[in-house]
Image (cartoon, rainbow, N blue to C red):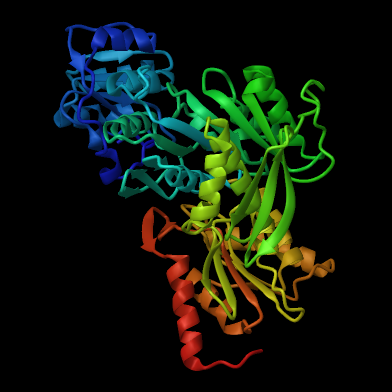
Length: 549
């Protein structure tokens, strides 16, 4: 198997019923390579030798640990009719004595999306493809995707969704393993959605997806930008490089329209993205959403100013969520509410609404379904998911500094004597620089910090814990809010300890893993669902009849 492709078997089997055979000569042309003999057609494409079907093209690409060409013999046994690979891969295929014709190309990964689009017919120009919405940014992609999906469904669309948690093609739900699947899978899913009569689909687009060409061959109808904060610097190296990769979505080749959230007048990355999108797409094809502050409104003010098209107003609490207004520069107003907690979910809801309006939905129709269906109070698994009350117990996917800060702020108890208790860790083999920063943030916004394991992968779990805890202890010693910094493992023990020390007025936040149901330690998946562990700990606490503290 190519180590770059990790899609599960069930998800990978989701293909359209009627692929369009592509000649090997045309395949070679699209890849910028040479056409081998004999003349033949390919009817599918896969990066994973285990998921190949007879007639497929095996895209044997270099991976993080090994080269996919090492599995060419397995691909041949599975029924692949040809191999697409680079010069190194072609040599590996020849040495292995594999008899498949080889299309050798200098950068085969860049061609995979285009080839997949041709084979599966995922984005035809005949008007039958679903309207396609892309969400990118550091935080908020998943929730915004669910919000848009719910709003589109309320408007009468038959909807699809591709994201971190699951893939939806109509009513069928398949667990997802990558935020954005590999290009062959994406195009197969989009073609399958078209066959099933889906009229609108929402999709998360990660920086990894853009870096590794997973959405090549797709032009979205509307692309939205949530925010940019520190994450994935192990891949991108710097925030400027991270921004540049994200900005690649906002080009004429990848989207027709854009919606960019600008937090306030000091939001450097939002302002830069708005200016970039307008330069690339044209001013009239870009809508900006200003959340707060004295945001300039002149659309002709130049690239340094973003000219807010929609402004957030009249923000008020509604239960644990909020209601607010979105006011357009021309006076149009939408009354919006979401039952999910946190100011960041206000931003996510606002972005989803404006993206749907930008796609051509009538504002009056959008207002009607907002009033009648409350579509922005939809459940999003593992995203500010309320597990219990008294104490308030929440599971959230927050796994980077900004997301953790926002989640901690969102669970602040209303009672003066209420405490915040947070349980979290950091992922192994990822950006180490954010570990002490997250510890510091936890100590600044929580009364009790419990550091535990996330997914260590092949890294020493103890070292990860200590790097996070060091940041928390330093902040505590410098006068931060935290009174206690504990290091506990395994994670289930840490969750139970948090619940055991919580009083009825307190809040317990279990952060970092959200919807995930396995913990990966040295290549072994161990069952672990924060939501189930938290529910069990709360149930045990109720049975014990603990008094308020």
